[in-house]
Length: 273
Image 1 (cartoon, helix red, strand yellow):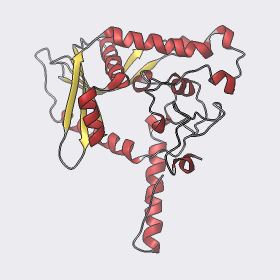
Image 2 (image 1 turned 180 degrees about the vertical axis):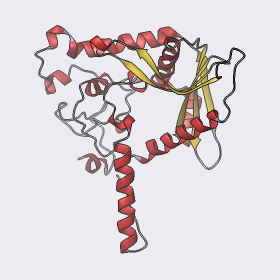
Image 3 (image 1 turned 90 degrees about the vertical axis):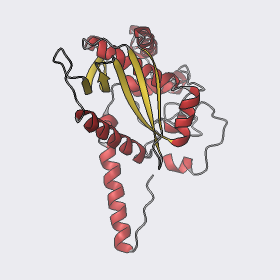
Image 4 (image 1 turned 180 degrees about the horizontal axis):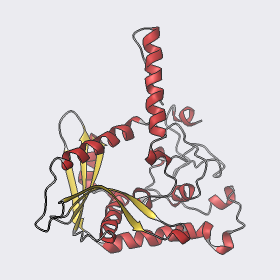
């Protein structure tokens, strides 16, 4: 939800127009329009959110804040330019960096289970798969103390598998957290690349999608009773979910979150009503 202010009546009108331009542009960006699940979503701890996404279910939370992803997209573009300016040639004649290259994690079009995405950076010299995360200061501290969490970790290894499928030999995955703060704060989490982490995540995704793609699910009516069989998770980030609807009693309309008895944050219900 945008809050706009102007120095006078004309300034207010202009502020509202700019806010609408930002919102419309962000909503129509390729990542926002993506319906097929990508590497960033495979590790989502909430099976219900994955199911909503895979079924292209109507969103309940249609007024999510847009400025954070806009800033994040700009940061990714800045990092892309930075590494393009530092591109080098390896002894075998190949460029050192693969920058924002699209990779295919799994290609099964007959089953509708293609997983692909844009990998932020692959460093051939060190065999490192890099992923950039622009986060708030408190989030950076959380990741510094507790690690990246399963979703980001799985995403990193999925991109590793994508690079491997592209003929590369990844040795390590790394997530670089950069704080949105007035001073530079950088934390890097890294571990050896493990193909099995990616394969296990894909197997879990198949288990989730089998609920509504198997032969015995052809006549399923995806109403509230069906959605109650699809679990959420204590680790789910409900506030950022496009299907989050505080107080909802019909899961076909929206999900009340992983703790439906907890009161919604003041003002948030009106935000997504």
